[in-house]
Length: 222
Image (cartoon, rainbow, N blue to C red):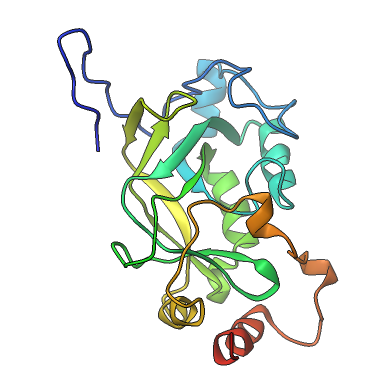
């Protein structure tokens, strides 16, 4: 989804996972990004190996509860902030138990939006840390391709398409039920207002697994 060029505008190239930050270091900065690297040396890039572009839409974003993990990855060179971004297509973003956010792999559903978030370039080591947080091996979320655009201007008028990005979607085993339980109405952004009432993992009841909490949620009345 690329902006149409005019007489004075050339088409912008797509970003790929190997790119460094596409914005100045003080652009789109938020809480907790003071340790974020602004560039990488060739030696560091070679040591890091292949990188993956990860679209974050929930608690991994700046100012939210799990962003500390990305801060740790900044310090080790395993993550780099690329910029504010959004999905290129309409997708449902809903809240489940304890106001946990879920992006659903149900594109084009009525009641969904182009979801706003942030884009990071992550090494294989960093990706493994994110997989663990998101419970990929336990069927909590699944990491799948997502089409996104980087919002190159504050007013989002200029958008740069991105190749090869991934996102952590709600697992397909419960995604449709989560959408139905949410009244088939999604959010455009996991904002502080939408996240109000979020309960951190350490503060949730410990007698149930996360999947059990999801099952209770989707089977309950709204």
